[in-house]
Amino acid sequence: MLTEVLRALSEGSTLSELCQRLGSTPQALAQILERLRRGGYVVETSLAGEECAEGGGCANCKLLKLCSKAKAPAWRLWRLTAKGRAAVAARPSPGADPLRG
Image (cartoon, rainbow, N blue to C red; front, side, top):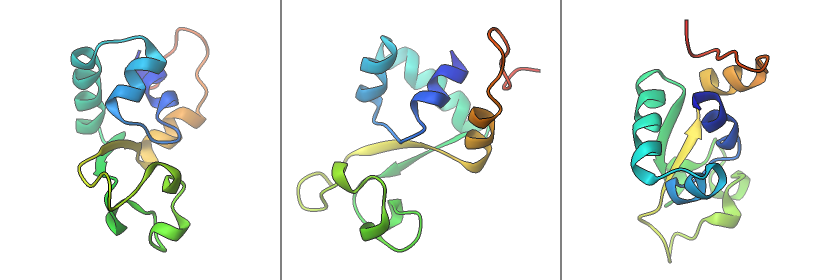
């Protein structure tokens, strides 16, 4: 399930979006996300402003369509770190999990 969560986060997601995509409960995914955060695979960030953009501010942010500083400053978003992107790119064979070992 860890790898499935990482793959689902490749574009960034809120907890509710992940629940819908993966058919899981918020409680179960919150535990998984916390484990991935502690391992350095994901970060939780705010959708409200410059701090969520990967350089260049909001105009260059892939998540601009989800964001509105004026209407949703409290949204929280889970995103992959470089380590998380590398784990997704590893494309493990079925049954293999690059996070275990």
